[in-house]
Image (cartoon, rainbow, N blue to C red; front, side):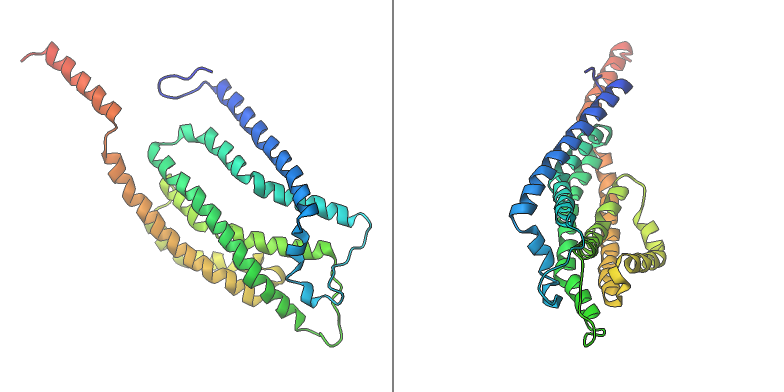
Length: 272
């Protein structure tokens, strides 16, 4: 593969590189799904998802309404586990394809941002699993409990639970997204501060939309961390933008060396 001294590749080589990156990412996803099926079948992933709702079930078990449902449930969970397991590899393939086009300052910011994003995603999922999910179940259980008993299908419960976990995990990525946009020069701290009121309205609507069952307590539980994360995003954007002039002021050694060669040539041509 031809690469010129500036690190640029011809267009067809870019397409070939993209094809191999997609092939590797897709292969890792398929392999991870196979591993995910083994994990779901033998290592009690279903138990982990059912535990929060088990106290509210009359017989302690969820219901199925088709003989094929347990098999397809395992396939769905295997796909989710496979995506989680292969996600670092997929991110690496995307990064390996895009990183040559980024400046050194951008790469130094984006790499820590990806690790921070993983930690924030885990924090959001943990908050949903240990706080928001039990809260919503207690809320729903308080209605007509003397007349009604829960008969819940496994599909409904898993859709509810997975949606809640993913909603919290994804929205907790807000500081990372803002930090990357600030590193690329697409947003500034001043712009974020000027749009604070609009952001609060958007956060409220988003939290209400993502909250399963539209429970007010869960909406608030999702909204307040988002507001805090937005303020943190402003601080991170200010830090990134403040670092940019300092790093741009340092001239790379290659440019300094080339400038010295040009100056020496001028002195030889014009001794005076």
